[in-house]
Image 1 (cartoon, rainbow, N blue to C red):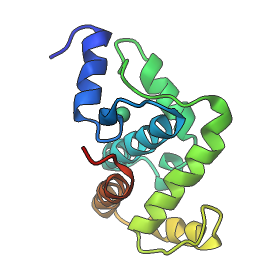
Image 2: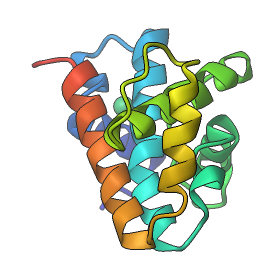
Image 3: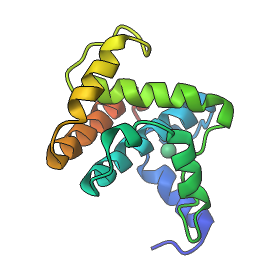
Image 4: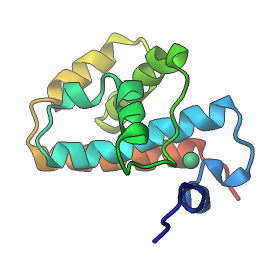
Length: 144
Ligand SMILES: [Zn+2]
């Protein structure tokens, strides 16, 4: 396993379908961040963290990951000015995976779908986040 942040970063890039293109522009970073939150959502749901907590404050969560002692130096953290956008996109991705068909990131059907999914048992929520991460990657990842 990598012991330095440099090799952790290289590791992140090599298995990240978003960053693999090498062009780390802002949209790449944001998509990479969304996928990271969705992937972590699976583990958080496993820990019985309420769904509504998982889908809010994504930027803050990523910053916490990146700055925790011995933390994941390879975690992408978008600028704070983009956190609202990041939250909206995470919520939309989860709602899509739950079967909603939002017309935009502000569609009220997103809130409805999330409120319903928040009532689901932990295992179903874990699968929901898995599906959301997979769908998001299929839709947005750079094809090598
Ligand atoms: Zn990445």
